[in-house]
Length: 195
Ligand code: IMP
Image (cartoon, rainbow, N blue to C red; front, side, top):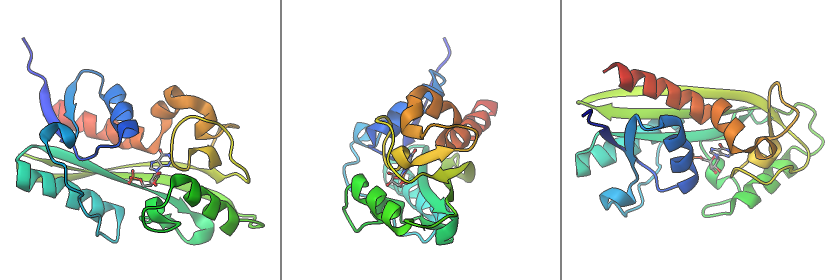
């Protein structure tokens, strides 16, 4: 009987867990932070996505001893020189609602012609005393008004390159195949499966 490797994904975000578990299929048993009884907030104090992902993964490894991976994602808008980037979750202020972030971005970009943007995910993996980083990028643009009801975060205003629908209109099945997180996760899986 083959033994499925247990690994912690340093998040309690149910959307992300659902996404990543689908991508992982049954190849790995992915535990959330609450499933290992880690109930404290892990500060995201880094200035880059890479730093934040590493901070979270190291926290779990050091305190709980599990092999662990952590992700950090940012929406990088060309006209904003890569912003909100690492600050995407709190673009409209600490503890704000995702809706506020979207509204702020739409109003900042009002009348701005260049709408190019990309989602970038960095996954930090801590395993057997080694640290590894994996990156996934999806390019696209920010549309003028929200469209679609699925997904989360900035999905209703992000239209990936090659599509005429936003992430929120495309639905989870398509998004999970083409997303920044899917690309980074595939790299992570490929790495883990080789070991
Ligand atoms: P996190 O690092 O994954 O928590 O993401 C930071 C911010 O980017 C959050 O505000 C999310 O709403 C947003 N975000 C992350 N991934 C996605 C996505 O797949 N679609 C839309 N927004 C996202």
